[in-house]
Amino acid sequence: MLLTQTVQSGDWKNEKHVPELEYKELDEGKYEVSAAVGTEIEHPNTLEHHIVWIKVFFIPEGSKLPIEVADYNFSAHGESEVYSVPKAVGEFKSEKKGTLFALSYCNIHGLWENSLEIK
Image 1 (tube, rainbow, N blue to C red):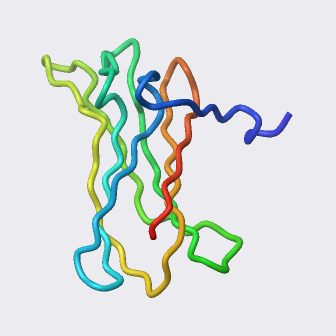
Image 2: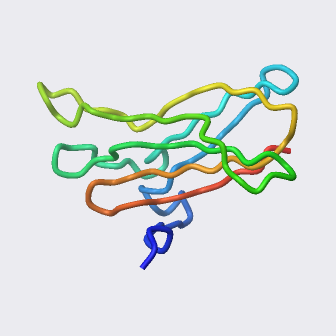
């Protein structure tokens, strides 16, 4: 079995584990990207059940390989009644359009993915 065979996807409006992606162009070729899990259906984010991390990749048009543009780790899972909200915002620059990909990892339900084309 390959690790890629364990990655799950789904309609993020019906599944609380799929990372949701949004972007806005700040300047020509400069993008703000947000990645979140559980916007429509909240993820529990307790010590027992939580999103550990979200990674965001970008594949520019004409390229075969993804470039990691963001890596977010969420570490507060109930310690002293503090809970991480699995949402992160970052920026990157690219002269080319392309596709964003996000992977999220739930400590119980594994890897989840989503993608969004930058037009």
